[in-house]
Length: 146
Image (cartoon, rainbow, N blue to C red; front, side, top):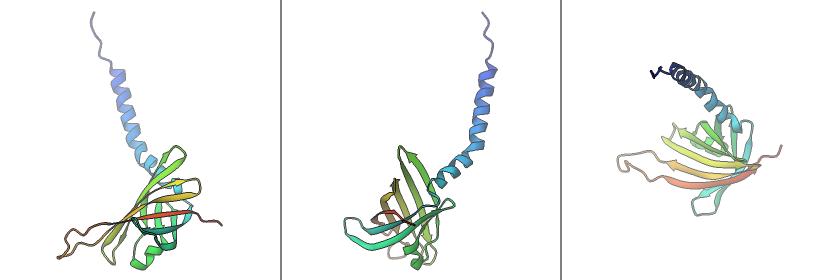
């Protein structure tokens, strides 16, 4: 019996690949907006220590993340990557300070009206400290009541 090449499966695979490539950016954008419109009031502290900031305001808007407390150090808004995990939303965002040459990486979980996570601050490299140690911290809070 002679075998006939199965062109239908090759075409189907190509169509699926093209569709995935076309929908990829929109799917990522939609995930970034999972937290849009939410504002949280959080306490923050260095890892293993009590809070040293009692009422920072974290805002999610237009796929971006903003920390009000960090305005004084010149930090900008950062792009949010958010993913659903059951009844929770995990997120990551990076903010940068052009003023000081530092960056912060925020990673956390939103479950219901609660938020918590870690923040890592990466210092600016210098001649005497080419690889400064990152400083880890925590944050925890709740959805801001209107």
